[in-house]
Amino acid sequence: MQFSDKFKSGYVALVGQPNVGKSTLLNALLGTKLAIISPKPQTTRHRILGVLTGEDYQIVFLDTPGLIKPQYELQSVMVKAARVAITDADVIVLMTEAGKSPAEADLEILEQLKSTGKPILLAINKIDLIYKDLLLPLIDAYSQIHEFLDIIPISALELDGLDELKRSLREALPEHPPYYPEDYLTEHSERFFVSEIIREKIFYLYGEEIPYSTTVEIVEFKEKTGKKDYIQAAIYVERDSQRAMLIGKKGLALKRVGQLAREEIEQLLNRPVYLDLWVKVREKWRRDPAAVKHFGYSTNLPK
Ligand SMILES: Nc1nc2c(ncn2[C@@H]2O[C@H](COP(=O)(O)OP(=O)(O)OP(=O)(O)O)[C@@H](O)[C@H]2O)c(=O)[nH]1
Ligand SMILES: [Mg+2]
Image 1 (cartoon, rainbow, N blue to C red):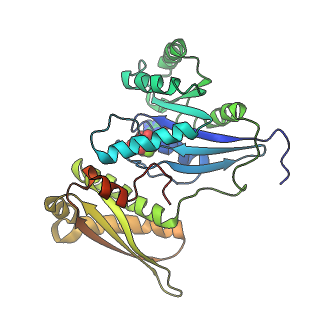
Image 2 (tube, rainbow, N blue to C red):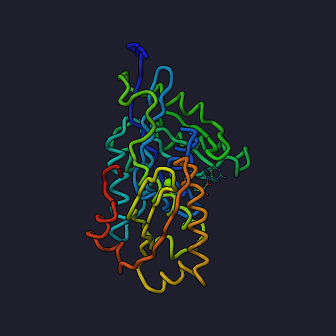
Image 3 (spheres, protein in one colour):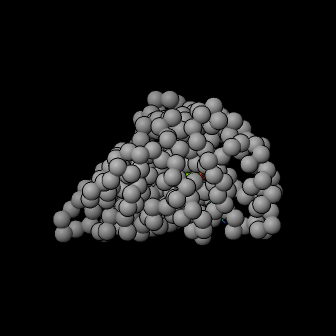
């Protein structure tokens, strides 16, 4: 492809409170599932990179963990990862959930973002859930608070408003040659995606305690010609009681995790897989900086 002088390219960070739909938006924009999603807050723990290349632009999206006040080491690292994405970004997308009025937590995040001096686009998500009459007063309220690059109501779930969002972002990007080849999608490895898929199933299948105490480590990943691939993953929890809960009576709960994860991993890899799940205990790993680092949480992009 020949790139004209007018080619635009840059980094766009998707930031906001947990659970507002950042990862859903990343996947919707790229038309493929890169980031895991769940109805529970704090699903995303890393910044996830996804590249969208158009005719005359390339947007490098950085999905980020939700911005919160950290209470333990894992959360600190998650918030730091979001901050690094904000530092790397040419344009910031602040994502909020549509409601009656701007939420206090969103305004606090906006204050932090304003100090970067970078252009901020406000994406008001989940408009499929509200009465349309609420939208104009909400946009009006936000526009009085800050001079946003743009304010775009969207539904990441129903793919509403995404063209407008892309157009607006393209406008705001600097003229720059593409950072990545045109067919490039992401930097993360298959191993990383496999561990995330397992984590996602745990977020869906268990209550409040287990998902947050869990991390997944890929122990072995062997491609076997003519046979199923062999993937062994260790799921770490913080206590014996959680281990028992995760496994369930006669191992049925863990079996369900394995089934759902395997189906999606096979779709991702496009080949049959034998998924071998083990559950282990590493006490209070979320509070232990060495363990958090060991399990791959850092401000860098996960490989
Ligand atoms: N109704 C509706 N639900 C949505 C929309 N976008 C996302 N959701 C739902 O909101 C929940 C959270 O979505 P995520 O994409 O995981 O949110 P997130 O901002 O990445 O959350 P964290 O990673 O925890 O910070 C999921 O249940 C999504 O299905 C939307 O436009 N409309
Ligand atoms: Mg997310």
